[in-house]
Length: 166
Image (tube, rainbow, N blue to C red; front, side):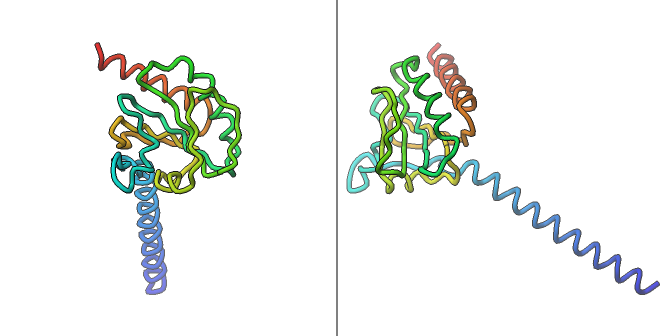
């Protein structure tokens, strides 16, 4: 009887430890989703280099890609298709860690090839979409796993801007 109680106590302790570890991991993943929101890219002073993401008077949708991303081409194709249809107060910027980035994109899509700025946009996933307001503040981040996901997020953003103006 004593052995059964000891074995059950050990199993309950292991179950509790596993549950606590799982809860911690879920919290980490949840926080990673909101990582980067509220980051301010300086508009003046010595940190103004990172302000390349902000465009005065408009909202910038920054697509963060890296050189080892197998699905980034699909996301960039979707951005190229949507670039011409965006309202004048929205624009795309591609942020790459590859100084040799040479993808074919429309002229309206800015491309920033600076690894320092890429690191400053501190979301833990790529490709990612960061929405940067005119003051250089990141107001939204989301992982973008496909061109369809990017299209859906951008269409929602355009619809929300139209609702706010009404």
